[in-house]
Amino acid sequence: MTTPTDTPSTARIRHRDGRRVRPTGGQTRVLPAPSPAQLCEQLPLTYHAAHTVMTARHDIVRVLDGRDDRLLAIVGPCSVHDRTAALDYASRLRDAAAGLADDLLVVMRVYVEKPRSCLGWPGLVGDPGLDGGADLGRGLAEARSLMLDIAESGLPVACEWVNPATPAYLSDVVAWGSVGARTAASQVHRDLASGLPMPVGVKNGTDGSVQVAVDAVRAAAAPHTFLGASGAGAVSVLRTSGNPDCHVVLRGGADGPNYGAAHVRRAAELLSGAGLPARVLVDASHGNSGKQHERQRVVADDLAVRVADGDTTVRGVLLESFLVPGRQDPGSRPLVHGQSVTDACVGWSGTAQLLRELAGAARARRHARCPRPRLDAVDPDSVALGAVPLMERT
Image (cartoon, one colour):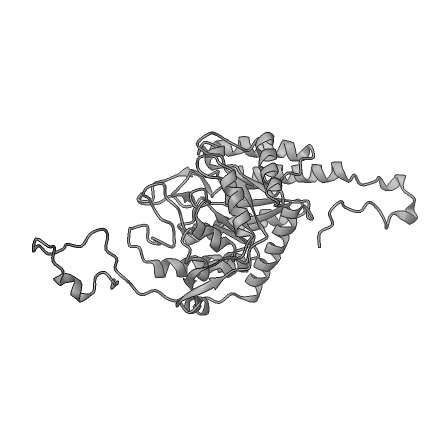
């Protein structure tokens, strides 16, 4: 990498005692990469995929605002690493989602970048071969191709934005985005979220702080100006409009879980106090499950009971789920088909059951708030008017 500090003349710089000044810190190599425009031209967004993305974004915002009384369910692997397994899972989830569509709005987690507390596999974009090869050009292409295929099938896609450059390659295929616990306080990610063309969930901090997520939502709602890359790949000044569709995701933290009714109520109060809509999702994994995948059921069951009792504060749930329960090391050979290589996940059979329970809870809440009359107890001439659903979906 050529920078202002390592031009050819730099090698001749000497310390006052005559010794050559040695380089300090890290060094960077610059490698070629396709521009966002080039990759999007190579793998274009089709009409059917665009329809999936745009209608899902619209419906997600309606759920967040309470105009659609379904629950939002963002479900899928902690991270995707294998195209075949991801498409197998997507096919099953799509069919399940179709059967539960009256009560759940299902979006598949297709997380292709992984923030690490220290070191570890960086995700499909950073290491598509799981071999340390770091072929980001291949990783971006594989990630976009996979997302396109899933969206083309009619199932919307969600992902977490880690590297601020990645959305230029993938954001047109994503219906819901996330800013993670490690980056909720990052000004770069708040700037980024302010211009993303989708609803964005901001997780509470790893220490459990919900205030940092509320501050991020407030910051992302405002316009920002910052340096970034254009579609052609050139460094440009980016000016954003502000994103009014950001919201808080409770994921627990170092101080324990925060999915309880009191925690959710407190998060809603913090949002309202900041002049923001009280829109809250709950992540059943991470700190809320103590990273024990079986305990996601405990969280989901608790939420289902509250929703069925009429609670409207929680607008949706996040679940980490794959075909095979548990996890495996990314260096394992052979890899188990459909098992996570990052955080442990609930298996498919458990996932299907949890989705049915959450759908039942949403249905019970709707019926409790707006019971339908018995047809034999109503004047036949008035049946056409019937009982109008509390929140009609369009």
